[in-house]
Length: 286
Length: 271
Image (cartoon, rainbow over all chains, first blue to last red):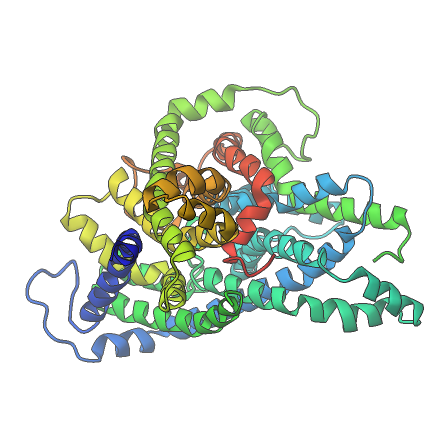
């Protein structure tokens, strides 16, 4: 008897808290999304049917937000996977200072998002005093007002700066388990560097690539602090993603109903990605 | 890339690395400049360092208050998270049942609920409980959002403890509590430490919930740094000093535990 109750009792706090953490917000979001609920207009919350969903989806900012979310997601994943593999290959073999290089490379990943964003916004991207402006002037070019002219690209640079090291570290870890004998055998059989990369290294990296893509998708779908502290979603809606749009509806427009409809949209989007990721990780359990 | 000459590889690796880390190096340097030196054109590489920014940051925005909030929320949420996650992971690793796998998968799936999806309910709940801008609400939210990762990390750590040792203890008549205290606890210190470390890093850097649920009272360092986003005035040196004090502890922790942190973040999918 105790052999079964004790393990269950040990598990119950974690299961119970996570169940609450999932069900309570989800239930409330579903309820909010079906009523007229604005924090600025007290009174009864009448049933809204699909009105909130319709309002959120037909909002002119919605299409732009979805586009921006996908662009941000796609660009950062592309930069971090391609750049990460390149860097990992570069530092995989021994060279003087390899240990220090690897430690330095991972550093940006541990910088908190608000500090990352402001470091780039002010010290790097400021059109007059920023480092990038100085570099542009050095090469005889007109300095760029990054956050005004290329707001989304600026956000992409900040976020990629954070996630490239993450991807790189995963690829470095994975490359260490690459079969060296096989590589040497391929070399003796006359395979050139590109063939070795294409037929041996890349297949070996398939799984880590999938993991990086999935993990980054989950985190990048809800990029928030970088936008909040730099562009504020603007100019206009040029750098507003879905997460920031929901935030704007909720805490700036006080429209709980519409924001909740948007939140459900975001949850569904994230879950589609998560299903694939969970399958990959699940295989690891067996 | 073995075919490239060593010199080329070394040089390119160092140049690329220094380019990537340059913003951090620049942040470090700017923290010790005066405000005028910080915006000097062309940028000043050599200057006599000053410490006045650090005292200024404390005087103007009460850095220590925010730092205290960061320490309290991240330490408390780590302890609380370990207290909830460790028994569950222990139970699943050593007394697995048919549903263990499903429970683990389900826990993982809760981590993928986007925070913005839960923003309004949590905000409304915190508001009606009078917990907006309190350390309590931040600690609870940090704990809950890290819990799935902690259970997973501890689970895979516990799984690596050899079963023979446990069986020997059981043969000697150890109870579950005795087994836990004398056999598992010493062996589990490693996984507990690295899981705790990951949770500390995640909570310390957390920005979504702290920006939305806290401000002057319970604001963490992430909130303090965000308050430097206004374009007015000369403040780059102070921003750098504040940022340096906010990120240095975690970056150093990250250097020493990168492998465990990455394993935790990928739920052990990359080894």
